[in-house]
Amino acid sequence: MSIEKTSIDIGNGFIDHGVAVPLSNNRGIVATIDGSGKNIVLLWLFDCKGCSGLLWIDAENGTSKEYSIPFSSNGDCPYASLLSGRNKFYTHFNSHFLEFDPTQRAFTFSAETAPKMAMAMTESDDGVIWSVTYPNSSIAAFNPKTKEFTDYGQIHKENWPQYPRSLASDDKGWLYFAVGNTASHIIGFNPQTRTSKPLIPETERVSGMSMVFRDLNGKVYGNPNADGSNNWYELYNGSATKIAGLINQSPKPVITGDQNLFYKRFPDGSRIKECDTILRCIEVEDAKTGITRKYSFNYRSEGALIMGVAAAPDGTVCGGTAFPMRFFRYDPAADVIENNAAFNQYNTVLMHDKKFFIGGYPYGALLEWDPAKPWIETVKNASGCNPEYITECNPAIFRPHKLIADPKSGTVVLSGTPAYGYTGGGLLFWDPKERSSTLLTHTDIIPHHSTAAMAILPGGKLLAGTTTAPGTGGEKKAIAAELYIIDIFSKNVEWHCAVIPGAQEYTDLCISPSGMVFGFTDAERFFVFDPVKREIIHSRQTAAEFGYTATNDGPRVFVTDPKGEIYILFSKGIARVNLTDYTITLAAESPVTILTGGDYLCGRIYFSSGSHLFSYSLAKNTW
Image 1 (cartoon, rainbow, N blue to C red):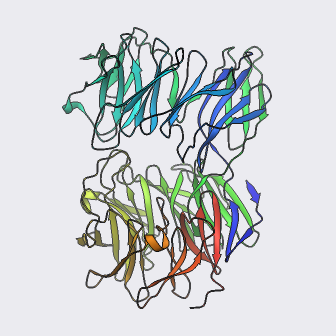
Image 2 (cartoon, rainbow, N blue to C red; image 1 turned 90 degrees about the horizontal axis):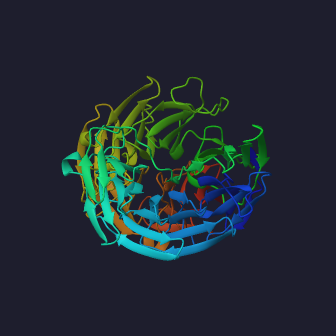
């Protein structure tokens, strides 16, 4: 799809090119009825600013209305929701528990809670609504009859962020929830005594997710490994009994789920066949006639969050967005932005040798796009696609952070953090000519570290900077981030050192014309590294003067122009580095907060802020 854009001059050399992808994502959909018995659809809307509200869609004609949430989303959104037996819609995010009543067409309850968002919800036999939250396994309960709300707070501790992805109650009033991802667990909780009880032996905890579900027999069943091992426990009245397996299980119907919840059936038997926020359309099959009708609906959107941008070989600026995951392409000559469905979240992007490479989340997928050929939507392992799916790196790389290419050998290198619950990320080396790849794990590089930043050194060497951050929900094990040098051909690490004590992440690296390497740690400290002497020769804090650097999974902090001048994207503006004395001078204060970088094209530096693509002209600067 294409969208005409009229770029707006916002002053000081900056242009707002508009919203790259003017779409929102859904974070849970349910089919239900209003107070008069009419079929309706309730849908949580999510854009670059977080949950923007609840969308009400009339299933008989597509008429829609938005209801604003009664608190600031602060960038957060639903990760779980529930439609109760009394036809109330619940969610819990940004430390707020929320109830929407379709019969009153209004939010009818909201309460502030312990941090932060529910990863699972359930309804107990007495009609109480329960939630359990990330990152500390805190529990909250709401009684719709009495309007009594209880925030029990954290009831289980780990030294890593907890993902409690399923929750169930038995007919004795005990709650059970499943924890992951670093080490799975199942926890029992007695609301009457406010006491919790770990139920799984330490020897049976695995890296990954556990699971629980309620059966119609009044008991709950759980497995320490949600991937399917036959290691089941019967959970009842606070006790866990190992059983040989599940026989004639009958899960109790509870309309709940994660951010992908899509409950399709209306009370009269009609069902939603499709509800698409991209196409803004809904298809409903009538239970009596079997006829499917399609309706259009609408909603307001601030647009999808831009992950990062880079110049492409065809003279355009391209990148990807998150939620929904789309690819966009801005043509400066025509002042047009087009967007297409992306295979995944384009975390980091790179132009190299007339191609455009993409490091995608999840699974650390590497894609290769040829702008000279027609766009053909990516399908994993399918031939003829453009972008072409190359490979994926799960679990060694799950959330990519950097792509770089060696100009001499042509080798493309992808780095990032590992899969959920893992610690230590790898490196992927891809040879576009031989169409072959080599994947290293963190134990081949520096154990328990992931690579966040890279720069190419002469002689087939790669300088890289690590992060101590684990994969999402993982356990941090490294004390300080390090720089290291690895040979691109032998894949041997030749040197590594924590050259800046206490630094937790090397945000970005850039080699200067003199061979010195410029870099940032923790988005706030600028440094100059001599790769021959392997030592820091200059360092200074920058956040107080310029703000933090551009961030996000693939930040692209440094931008180099054709003359070799090096610019830095700070939140407050665009700065230039003096290549001789390493002083930093603000070229222009930005009218907007610069969030992600960044590339040079035809005299302009492009970057993004939220859902908007911006650029800055270097023409008026003389140095």
